[in-house]
Length: 248
Image (tube, rainbow, N blue to C red; front, side, top):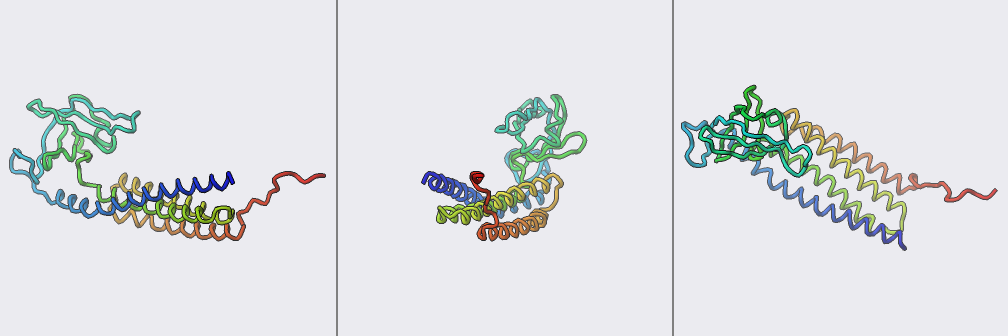
């Protein structure tokens, strides 16, 4: 009875994670068209003829002096940030999604160029010509949303199937093992999607590289999921080792 209750509680926890991640995947899917449109608008934006007085859709390259840069490596909850000064002395606070390649090398007094678009610094370029998007930058967001959607859907749907299977098959050890196989293969597909997104971002590959790399991996994991689930239902994964040694 205690084991059955524990299994039911575990199934409910998996179902809760499934609902949350599938919901996150739906939200990311809805964001992809807008992210694509915003990135296209940014790439097509013309250079400003003069310093924009109000937030404008043209791009303006503005020189800044670095006042301070904080990487927050020991604080995962805070993104890297920098304080940049205009020639007038006005301060702009800029945050970044990661530390490299520009913000990690910033030192007080360094000169950098910030690209201003719609009143925000969307990109920073150092003296060596290296570029880095800020959190306000539109470049890369479609790939980020797409990769996140794949991770959420692959994990969430597998967790949903495995959780429901486990919940309705309480007391059946073989079905319970098969449900666990489904759930953990979903975890593998989600992790594969995240790793693929990191590789795409690090190498600046186009968005189509994400499904091109993740798709074959996901198919292999799906094939493995089916094979191990069938093996679990047949009893091939049963532990036949006796609980106690037989009497001599």
